[in-house]
Image 1 (cartoon, rainbow, N blue to C red):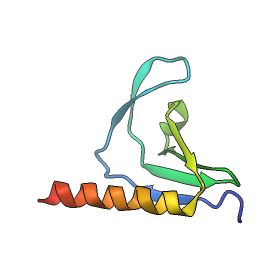
Image 2: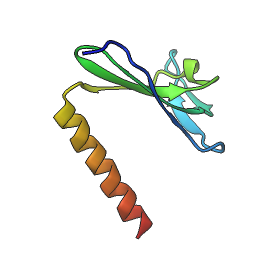
Image 3: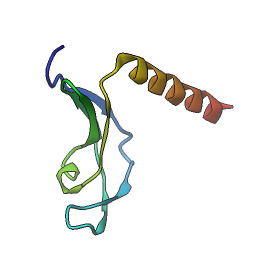
Image 4: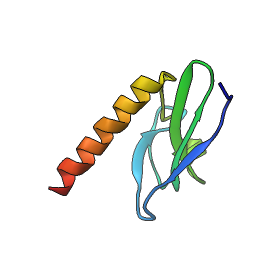
Length: 84
């Protein structure tokens, strides 16, 4: 397995989100995208962009390909539901 191969998904230009900062205060950031990397045990999903380093927001999920495909299917289902 490769180590720390980065993946990037651009967010819409007008996207903003309220997140917790490192000092546990809520702040508003305008990330440019979602940055994903992985190692031997976890996939790390976090905001990317100028404001992203102020955010404490990070999701860690298993590197299990079956789990990642299941997660992807659920996101696709959600998108289809939103379209109808």
